[in-house]
Length: 231
Image 1 (cartoon, one colour):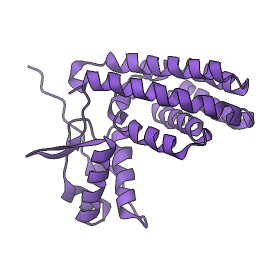
Image 2 (cartoon, rainbow, N blue to C red):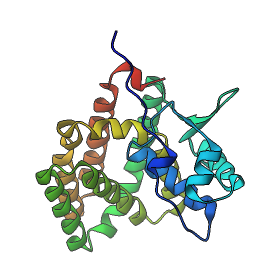
Image 3 (cartoon, rainbow, N blue to C red):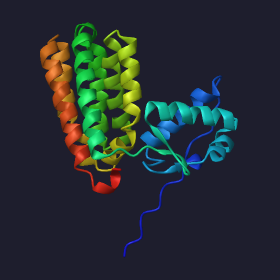
Image 4 (cartoon, helix red, strand yellow):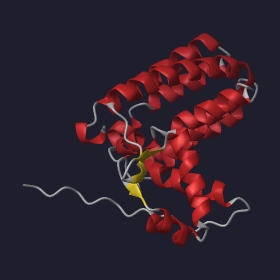
């Protein structure tokens, strides 16, 4: 019987943080760790380990844990402590239903704004092309997130942006699973081109269609992952 793969270390894989706000710094460090695969869904996090590695107080780590539980990235499990939240397939479907609705709203509002600065979007898209050409999955993932966040911010609704940011936390672990397979990670890139072209044409209807198609493709790829990635 094949042994189960060992889980990556968590606190040791995260760089020390120095920030005026220790809690914000810990939140950022944990979020990056999940996004980059240093910690995986279902893995238990130890408060003392993080406090020592990040050189912050245990109370700061505890508050960061509480914030990330509220945001959906972590889960508080009775008699086990805090773990990286593991979604069920049904929860993934619910997540995408909500994400598609909110990003569709955001892109309709953002398109007229983004269309006024075509150079910025083209530079970002060129960088994504380069990452695909180089097979640089992590850079591509960062740029993909930048594109989505730029569209959300341009909608001019801080509450909508905040909801989408929190919503994004709970899916980070599954999105990283796609990153380890370049073909899957890059499968949606052609949709980014069509989205940007729709935005630059100031065609909000087409931009919304492309956002929906892009998220539906991502949903399909995530749901095709093996069962052990889900609760």
